[in-house]
Each structure stands twice: as C-alpha cells, then as structure tokens.
Length: 324
Image 1: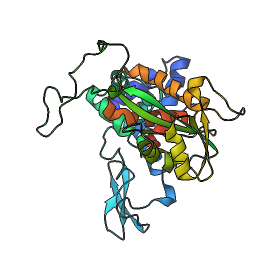
Image 2: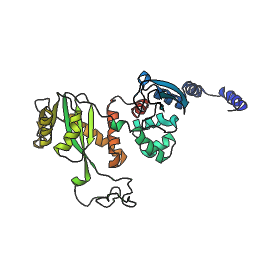
Image 3: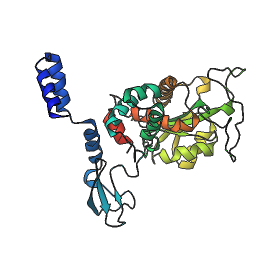
Image 4: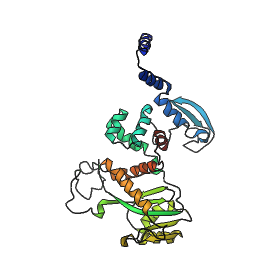
C-alpha cells in the first residue's frame, strides 16, 4: 500500500463504530494465515526432527524457501523441509489450509469447501484427499482389553470413473453397466457382489481400527484383524466361524454372541453394541456425501476415525497436523 493510501485509511479509523474497531483490532493482532500455518508445521517435530530420506539425525540449517525452513542431512546430504515426504508436499496456498481444515471438521461437501476456501472445485477435491492421506494410513497399533469386531457393508461405487467411456487399454471392463444416481437396480436388495465389506474393530477405550476386506473368509478377516490385537485381548464377535478360527490362531479368548437368535449381551459384559453404534454413526455421517467412490473409501474411513478420536470436537490445527 502506498503512503497516501495508508493516510486515507488512517483517517477513516475515527469514523469506525466500537464493534468495527474491535474487529479491526482482532484482525491486526492475529498473525497472517500463512505465518500461522508455517509456525504450526515447524513445531510439528521440534527437536525430534529426522531426515525423511534416510532417517538421519545430524541436520544443518539450509536456508529458507516458500516460507519454510530447509534442513540438510549430514548423512545423505539431501535437503528437506517440514512437508517433505508428506501428502501436503508441494501444495500451494498455505494461507487457506486452516480454512480447509475447518471445512473438513464440518464435513462440508466438495463444492461448499471450494466456496469457503475460494478455490476451484477440482482443487477442493484434490486437497481433500491430500489432507486425508495421513489419516487413512494411521491405524491403531494395538487394541487392548475387550475388543469388539463386526463387519459393515458399503455399496460398491465407480463414481467419477471413466472406465465405461474411456477405458485404458489394459483396464478390466466393469462387470455391469453404468448407473445414474438414484437409479433402482430392478430387484429388491443389493447383491452381495455389489457390496464392499469393511471390518470394524473397537475396544472399550473407544480406540477404533478398520479395514476394507477382499472377501468374508476367515483368512481375509484375520489378515486385517490380527495385527490390531494385543496379546491378552478378549475378542467379541458374532457366532460365525471366522472369529473363532482367528481367536484360535492368535491364542486369545473368543466370546461369541448368537445375534441371529436375539442374543445381545452375555454375562452383562460381552457384547458388540459399541462397534454396532460406531457403524451406525459412520453410515449416518457418510450419507451427506451422496455415495463415496470405492477407490476413496479408505480416505473417508480414516476421516471418521480422526473425528472419533476427539469426542469434544477436533480443531483445524489437529486436522492439518494429521496430514503431515
């Protein structure tokens, strides 16, 4: 701003109302949005920062670029910053990242997010999946105590896919014709071949893990479930043979529930009501997106886990840090 323009602005301050003065004071006291984002990213690792290329700890300051400090590793002699190797690397418009985090917190649609962040719809879509890149891979290391496990199902969706009109030369053609939104399948119910099974495991400390399954066999479920289980857990599930086989293979106790016969609680302790309640909240939350493409389902599962980890509400800052 030029000096004469600044003097005009100063002269208009005396005409502001008390509320307008308070708003102006607040805006002037807050750091610029990009500086706030940079400060948050720089404080992420602190003194525990390591080289993302080789894991080395011997680092040297190596200037500054795009607002972020650069470091150089003395072992591999490669430079990096706080975003190197993260889903947010090389992403622009840092001053709008916290606004996008607020949109993720509020679970806005792609178009509503684009309007709030003042970016293109394509940019809003790309940012959503870049920001959720960290959340979808962060599963709990181990579940403990009583662990409830169950499956839920989502309709298989090729939303946004061009495989029908412009298939790649080596692409497998879809098994069915494309359907428009809200088109009825022509029969009651949804065939199992058009459903994607998702395993949900949750302990009594409200720590949740999930995984998309290839099929419903004990081998497929066990491959996803066993890495989540601690050594002394008690596995609660339905009376299907899959969970009994998994428990026997892992050497843990299994508390089956015959839900088909109406059994809900055994010995006033063993039940799967927590995981069923989580499934209900997940399905209700997912309805606002009007169908999620199966290729992005893991991102939305990670998004919901991120929200569930903070029952009192997650902040835009926490969402931003989860992506790094």
